[in-house]
Length: 346
Length: 289
Image 1 (tube, rainbow over the protein chains, first blue to last red):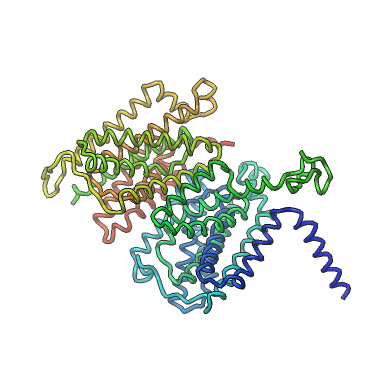
Image 2: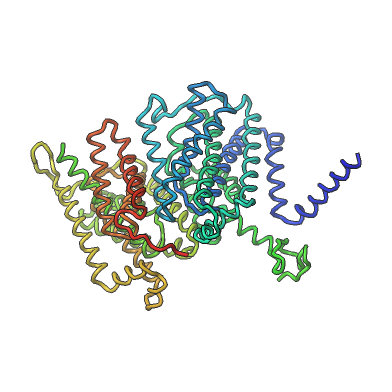
């Protein structure tokens, strides 16, 4: 009993001393809790649908950040992984009757394979060459799908897939919990040793090579990890919408994910997730003026970039938190001395 | 049949060549990956439609007005949206994507999504064997060569052309030699967007105009630039005809070729890149550190 009390108190102390001291961490906590209790407060199925789709795209955006943000391998064809995940899950579900919990992970594994197929030739390319070449892959796949309508449904896509779950609330919890878990996993990956190597590859690949690290392997790992997460989001999308169509492979899909990531702040994982949860409901809200919707969306993105070229969320974070000049630990902006080393905050 | 393939590939190839040269100019000098490049081409096409049908301009002055308007638009947009964030490469990237979407939506609101056409400058066609060659096609093809020749003269013989080439090669050294880098970049933007406008003006009688017409040329243009080697105008020139020819061949000879035309051209690009990572005529620069 006393052991339990000890652990509870320790947990409470960690929460008080590590989480409550920084507004950004409080916001993340509120975000998690709010997402988990959302269906208990609002029963509106339309709002729930928006949150579900935003969660699916949040996984997708974060997976782009994992590859392109961290390792700097700018991928303009990220829709490939999403589409392969969606089509993989759809074909498995339709042809073999596999339930969603089997077809989504297997679809994601096919997306990993796609990641390797794209990654191996692209290892020789750098920078803009890589970005423009990767753009080609989803287009090639989309036209192959169009030419084989008997297996893939052609232009109409494959419809009538199995539902994730019977009720909207169950759907909601499956998707949201998956999103929270996967995003946390991605964030932990970027925080690990591997994440540091990814950072280093972006900053200076030659130096990493010189340090005796096999950068080729790490770049392939980044491609497959990113393909896996994007594939899962594609599979979730296919089973939630109950259709996998060629629209999942469109160029606009690849561009959309770039917009989310840069808007939210690259190389953060939380930035793209936050950006999706801001931009996706915004786009739905703009449905009130259907003709002007996309135009206003584009203008909002342009204007925000003009003032915050490093992304919206890092800008906000730097406003409410400052870094201690001595020990480099983050503090609330209004503190006059550092919370750890008590140095004067300027 | 063979003649049809030839004509189509020459027309497509010359469109891609014009677009790709503008794109690599802006990339080489200002380091901007301008996704909105073909959106300006679409705006030019709409401009011609608007001035000929709504304002009643004659075709030649409509084209000139469109080119001037598009270059002006590119300049204004560059000053307002792109120049303040030029230091942030990623921000510029999505800035141009957002710009392309904004232009597309503006055209969609102004002109709706209907397919529109513009009359040819010269009507009629010549019969060669079984194939018809429209005079407009010959005119288009000829003017592409004139424009490309002028472009080459400009880059090789004028002072500004020299500055542009120097800045593309080494930005910092060019700056040290007293070339105002930001001014050169601005001129490159104006010329490049102007070229997109010229492309739109020359091609427009041969295509249908719609707000999404920039999507396919964008992809082909990027493939051309990569295949030919970035920053190599000669490379872009050859690559655009290779890809244009491949596209035409697929469309005419393969069943369901209209779906596959992009895929085949892009596969060629990927295969070439596997053998030559810097493209056909590209120079493998030392890694910038």
